[in-house]
Length: 490
Image (cartoon, rainbow, N blue to C red):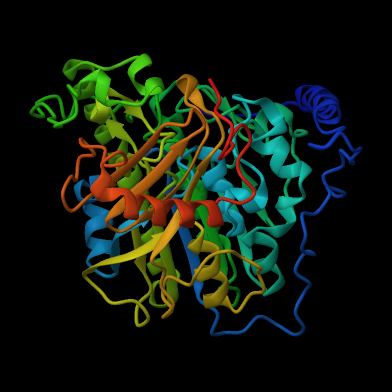
């Protein structure tokens, strides 16, 4: 059962968080003073979209983004509501990818439509601290003024963010602070997110009872947002679950429901260490038993998310909105289940950068088909703004439009488990990456779908390696922190 925060607790939280915010945001990355006020953050390079004249158009589509956390590609097919309501009635993009496979950089890209090398936000806010990532960096750079929310609000949308926002928002943001552009804003007041025992930014708190399970609580908030939006006003719902992120906690009703799953097999679960880059060979590796438990719990956690998809669709149908709603279902990054002996993401490899992505918009997107078109998280804002006729300056393409890409940049600062920074280039069939250590990898997925054989040092692949490096050098600019094309980091 949830409880309303008392005025005394709220006042203390505001005072404490405001003091932290001033301390963290007193200087920008160059040491220049910036304002700690949420309404006076330094913009990056583009003004906030201005309001449009006149009432909202009756033809504007409703927009619903459903964003999961650390969901592995392919698992969406195990979600019956996603399969029947979205995949069967929309398009599944089998080559949906992310250039930076990490929560906060990916979410920043989704919200703004800008690559990490454009936003200069590369981290979650723990590795490297708030200088490079997390909500403090996002806020400090004025990126909150450049998200989809102000752009759509200016077009007359009622906007709502319900669920996970950005890492460390709950640590540094003043209590009850609402970023620009959001009419409804309810996010976790913690560093990452929670399944139980958490507070939300609207002042409510939740405990450890089954009804406090965060996916269910957030789903109820989402359906309430839909049902309370005036029928003559378009809505934009950004629904972001914490699941199936570690610690992979399913709803109590689903715990143990998949205990009889057969073991998961991966060709690289026992990959020889001498075939890996130094940082991968040195990090902790996972056993078959550990991988199977994680897989089971993630799939069980997806069950409540699938139910949330069903309830959101039902709320849209009950209000007559389902006929003109753009749905985008996706994850913020991919996830390893023991591939290369590891569990997690935060790397340039295929199962770390490839994500579930389904788009449904009746009459605009083909139904029941799979597309191998190369689409990115950077394309979400472009697609949404094009559908709504909103003004946004982005780096992406409209996923429903005609323009396509042949490849994209891979980029990251140094990360978890002593992973070095990297830059690279990815196409549908090949991946090139150079690590800050000077190590280089090149894979051809038509010949080697599991990334078992590095082609970078074979003379017969020298021409391909050189061409892909040139693409990476041109696109990965400016380079991430701690990366250099000439200097090697230990």
